[in-house]
Image (cartoon, rainbow, N blue to C red; front, top):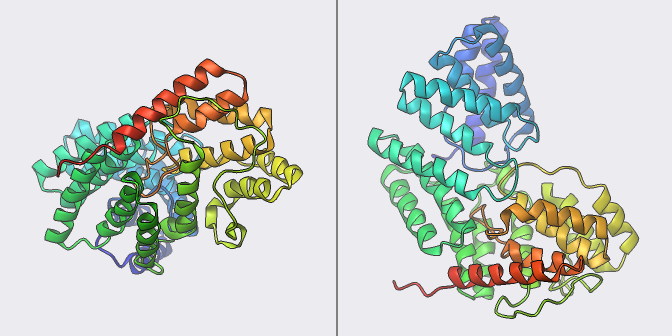
Length: 398
């Protein structure tokens, strides 16, 4: 949160290399555990460095054994943070053990770091905003009492994200202001990256789409050029496409349930979406763009070739992309899979990242249910989408 991320990663890699060259396992473990920096984004900036840290941390943990020490807890949290987004349970298990040790030792700093690790692995399915909100609330309370400023900021950013998912615009605004106040007081410049993207997202909720596009482009220009590739790569195109996905959900005030299967992809227009740099999001965008171009066969093949995506802040958004592509090509198995995957998030907006939205998940579920002939389910989802949209668009008394 203090900036100079690329430089910090370089120093960390050098320190690990020096420690490993000495062949001192304890020193290596100390170096690994010495970088207890809060993290809010669920994609690593340097995958090669993360893989190296994971190997070194596992080796160090083997040497320490099940000691129940603060050192082991810190190593476990380090391991879990570097395993963010993975689809297996190693990171989650490491975070849970780190938290248990920290609570046993009654160490506030250790617990804050472990809660950060827990947050990174609270994405094993969609619809878990409430669970992440509990982690964020505990972080804010713990860090405020113990003057752990960067973790207090982290807690507010987590709560900003979860408020976005729950269509609580007032709450998100409050946590954005709290994070910005702390950032200004303690000179934490990277906080403004996330609150700036939230400000752009917020404009979509008050109905000013043109201003939202402008704000998104401005937020992208302010991203550090080499410090946050895990966040920056492909984010602006995804945010702009997300605006179109939200439009594809339809007017939430309209109770009519119209099957979406087989119709053209909504809202993409004539823009050259295929020419944009989608970064790591490209595999999930590809089926939709192929469907939009009219190449149904290629779109169906791309849908069926999709990997299990990262378990991260953008999981709901990726599934909404898949849902729209499946509907556009009328691929019933893909429609069924998308509906099953998205149902746990029916009460949320696909905005849990706090930086972009794909509209109410229930709106996409309504179209999926209609395409499957489940008209009552579709109508219920449409009502939910209408309620969420009305809530997030409610007039702010301030």
